[in-house]
Structure formats: structure tokens, C-alpha cells
Amino acid sequence: MTATTPSTVLAFDVGERRIGVAVANGVARIAAPLTTLANEGDIAATIAQLVHDQQASALVLGLPRGLDGQETAQTRLIRQFGEHIRGVVGVPLYWQDEAVTSAQAEAELKHRGKPYVKADIDALSATYILEDYLRDNPGEF
Image (cartoon, rainbow, N blue to C red):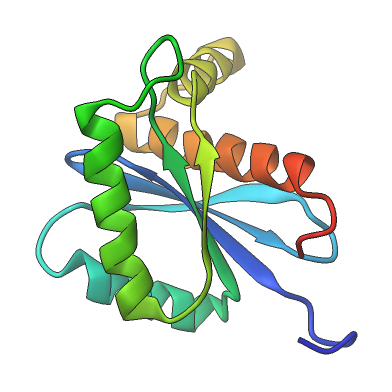
């Protein structure tokens, strides 16, 4: 990336049925919900197309852990998913603890008092994952 080409980072909250997606520009570093994908079919190709369309230079995947921070069966599944995606998209992939992001997203949407669906929670959760990553890694992008 040159100084005149801002980097774009995508974050994913991977669930069994849906994948919430958020985006941030490396200059403004403001994360926002982008979309929710159905976790079906050739999802790696779908994500690769999204990376291309958004001109993303990096991906952040939310990493679930147990209550004491330990790895769980879900942690291992998400790591496998991430390694598969890394091999397909060809951009760096980073991990971010996703502790309580879904609960935080649902609470925020309830507080707004407007109707929402599960996909809205997933996309907002991805936004929190990306915000946490950008906060924890200030010089990364």
C-alpha cells in the first residue's frame, strides 16, 4: 500500500448458519457493518469475491473461546475455517478474541428500539470484532 492508497480491512463473525461482515478503512479506522453471508456452498469463493470487491488488504476473524479463555471445539473449527479462507483469498488473516461481541450487539440493537433480525446481530458483532482489533493493533493498518 502506498500513502495515497488506504487499506481496507474486513472482519468476520463466523457462525454455523451466517457470517457477519464488517469493514473499516485503514485511514479512518472506523468499523461499520457491511453484510451478512449465508454460511453455505462455496463460502470461500464468496469471501474471496467480497475481498476483491472491497479491495481488502487484510481479514480479521473473530475467535471464540471458552469462559476461561481456553480453546474449545468451536475455536478449532473457526481456526480450520480461517486457514482454509487464508489459502483462498491471498491476503493476511488475523485473529481477534470475540468474547461477548454477539451479546453486546444484541443489547445494542435492543437499546435502539428498532426491529432487527439475527443477521443484524451478526454484522454488528463483526463490527465490534473489527473495532477491538483496530484498538488492540493501532499501527497495523
